Image (cartoon, rainbow, N blue to C red; front, side, top):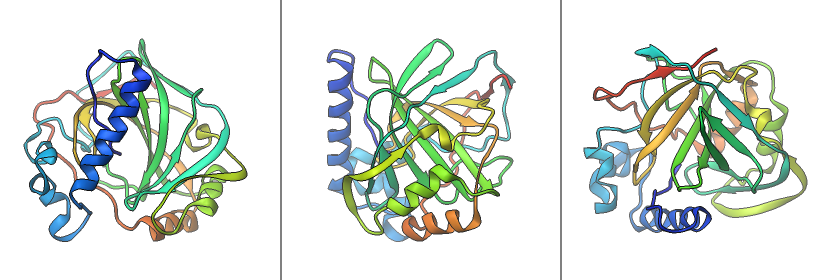
Length: 254
């Protein structure tokens, strides 16, 4: 996930577009990866734009087994089916989502921009990784970002995921529509959308902070072959767990 949050002086749509462009420029200015000399331990040294990756104290992902309190808030996803547009940016498989799908978190409301995947999961629960996670990236009217993470465990095949796997580019390829295929983001959600919530960052360079994170406490399922198929395309693309540095991790109502 990569985006840069900008000020509130421009319309939200323009800020979101500018954020994507600015982030893309920063990301492509310096090569980064998930292994070797350009891996996560080196991200902060690859470019001045990536300094937060090593100096930030609100970085993501985090372990979710230390929830400090239970909060009286709920998350609601109002996602809609739309024609599928998919890409492979060299780090993940990503679905670009048109206007119309939203996430409500307490009194805040965000529009869904894109969904992408990591194998294994980036967040952990009591130190345990799940085999895969989907990140739903949202923005509000002021240009603030929120991410919903849904971890997957091995089980029944997921029909929504199957359509993405069939359409996913096996190599780097820009966004392209898939004729005759629709994608409903809600097909990737667990039945219960209780979440852990905390303030964090992007999990890829430039590691920008100020992202409101929500990670579902319940898992979705995918078959072993589906998880293996996405892993074959993306490889290991999970950033290591980051220190909490005193941040409050809250678990919402079930």
